[in-house]
Image (tube, rainbow, N blue to C red):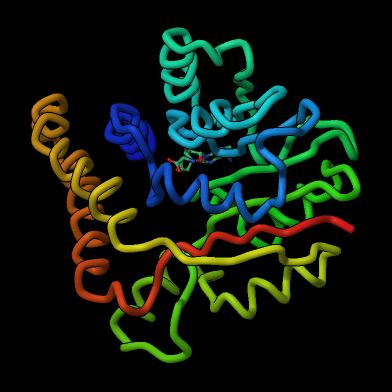
Length: 251
Ligand code: SAH
């Protein structure tokens, strides 16, 4: 197995593949200004949906169709399995596609959702690419790794700049949204529980089964070590970064 295949195998059993929670999804949904009680059916894309934690929350609260997009069939299979057991199943449609080659029609979406995934193509390139799929007045809701202070210790700066060079402050991210025809409707950053309780702790609990599954193969050990390092960085430096949730409207 390649390192990427191992990563998918580590994550596909989890409820989430990144920091976040149902209450964060609902808080961001509140910032869109959509009247949840009285709105006409919407066409929504959930890009980089993973195993669909937030997809199901959106389906429970919105009328219309949710197109859940991910590049890996393993996670989309889990979205399909899980949605069969709930009555909003007809609303979720899965599409295996890369986020940098989406085949939506221009101005066809009311809402683009993407939690913890836009970094795969980069925030700037993601918003530049995706906003053309939004109808005028449509909303974009994305979570993105963000510095929450102006300065920070060198160790964490080096770590994240190396892992994700586009990491920046919320003011810079908001400027990028504005430069690309989007007006901010709201911003917040994820609380510690969304990292630890909903993402890192369940992931850590899966490490030993994952290693057993792969006979403690060196590459599997490396995948676990890399995740352990990331988690240690979060535990040490949670005061300096988080995922920012950005909700913005197209003019
Ligand atoms: N939104 C989910 C998953 C976040 S992890 C959650 O918050 O729990 C990032 C997701 O992006 C993964 O499911 C990964 O498979 C997907 N991904 C990575 N590269 C991608 C690409 N090029 N196109 C579409 N999805 C991609």
